[in-house]
Length: 199
Image (cartoon, rainbow, N blue to C red; front, top):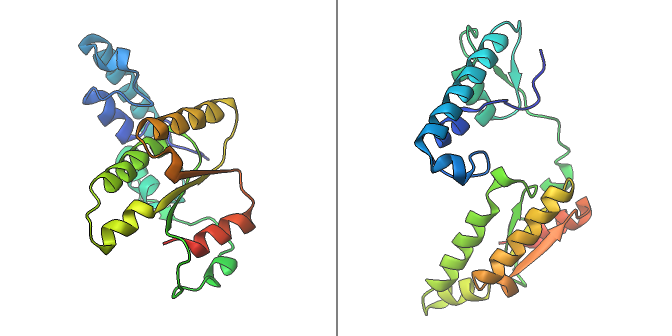
């Protein structure tokens, strides 16, 4: 049995149970106790079926500690020790060549993630704006005020492109539009260069 991504995650169930409006729980549903109850029942039924099916697998492997914890909670009858954790093969040789001790020419932070709702780029923008607003007058505060944020990610299609435009508008709304660079669908060499120069 191969499952690319958890169908229903415990995080999703918790968001619906707490009636938190987010990417998998529309504000219309989160605002209604009855709709939330029905959605929660639906999610729990799906999770039950998902767990039963997962319990039929002879071997279970996952590719991250988050997925491992999720699968261990949801799948039935897993062997002791839970699913095997197997990280996907990644050629890290080029990244290992990056110098760790270097003089910074520019001060910037790098965030690398696809422009998908579950990556919560809005929270990153809010944290960056808050850090800039609360920066003190000392040398560290000055560094925060001049720092830039480089949001590096890919867009899979029109939905991600729309989300990217919304994030750009939100950065402007937060007053940090001029301090955020959007690096979309960049080639590996450019990503490597950004990681090598980042704080």
